[in-house]
Image (cartoon, rainbow, N blue to C red):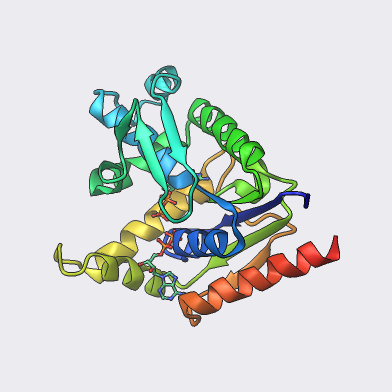
Length: 227
Ligand SMILES: Nc1ncnc2c1ncn2[C@@H]1O[C@H](COP(=O)(O)OP(=O)(O)O)[C@@H](O)[C@H]1O
Ligand SMILES: Nc1ccn([C@@H]2O[C@H](COP(=O)(O)OP(=O)(O)O)[C@@H](O)[C@H]2O)c(=O)n1
């Protein structure tokens, strides 16, 4: 049997990590893990349980309490917290605004990195794992490492496009929130958002989603053929 292929896809918000990773995994018959959803799930649990997310010591003490389980089928990814479906609640503005503070706490990262490595080790054909520190920290021996980028304007426009008029979307406010989260994620001490030295950078600003998917599938197939 072929050695499982491990694909790390990192980058800031709105660069296309989730949509690309799911599609690439589905095309190649690989599992899929959204590590951002796990940090969001941890944050949702903290907020729901009255933890002060700006108090790192309090967050650290609580970090081992929730049971977070990710389903890794790319056509139907799932996430539960203590057995409850968390897919909806982890996407609220409240969670988005608090997630960078929670994910900066080393105890939170240690706990989730362990889950992420177990998921990768358990994937029968291999896995696409997306996040901020997959290539640098979680899976430094990944077969292929991709770092997605896009202009802040393009990323904000994509995020606003998702709202479908459900919320009055102010592009400037969306962009400011993205840039603030990028700065927090890139500036933290433990495992910041960063491109691994051996990651391939793909600027998606002027590419369609299909072009990005095609580009990454080709890179993975080239790597597979070469080993
Ligand atoms: N290359 C692209 N061109 C245009 N829109 C894109 C592209 N890649 C992703 N999108 C859209 O942008 C939004 C954010 O993509 P997503 O995959 O959630 O990014 P991330 O996981 O990096 O935050 C989604 O609505 C997605 O459909
Ligand atoms: N590997 C990861 C993945 C996400 N995160 C944190 O989780 C947050 C949410 O990640 P996400 O991928 O769901 O964010 P979006 O790009 O979907 O907005 C990020 O802003 C980081 O603070 C992280 O610290 N490390």
